[in-house]
Length: 190
Image (cartoon, rainbow, N blue to C red; front, top):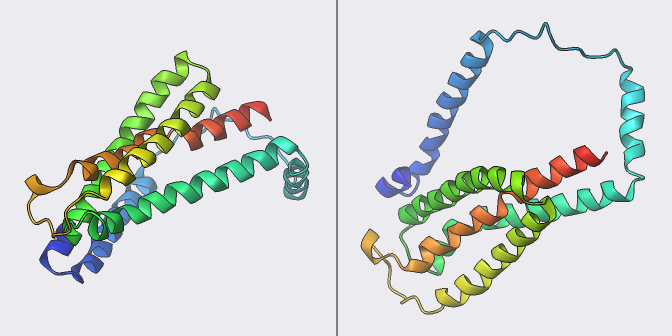
């Protein structure tokens, strides 16, 4: 958002920042010593491992899992990618603020992962996922009609941003536990 605020094409400069951070992460990975002497990896044949993986596709549970994860990623990426455009075109927030408002989504994702980890220790995974899906759907059903009543003038100040712009990113809190929980359950089951 800060790159866009100065000039709309300056967002391309974010790639230099991301490249620098990726280089730093790579340097830390290469220079960090990891002691793996205690781990045991059995000898296996790559072909037999590949064939065993293909055989898993015959399992109904695996097919349901693949379809579920595909649908989850489809919805998640749709919302994550669409949110700044929604803020700009529907809520009439400036481009820079629209991108910065998406950081609320990132905060909700982080908080959702932490809370889900605590909740899943105490409550059955099925009820947690069902609650998350229903709450995410409820968020959409509540927030989108509220967006209709936002005045059609461009919002320049942070204090003028409508409440709906703060509410919709909270969907990340409910979406984020779904994928890791499904992956964990399928690994435990298989």
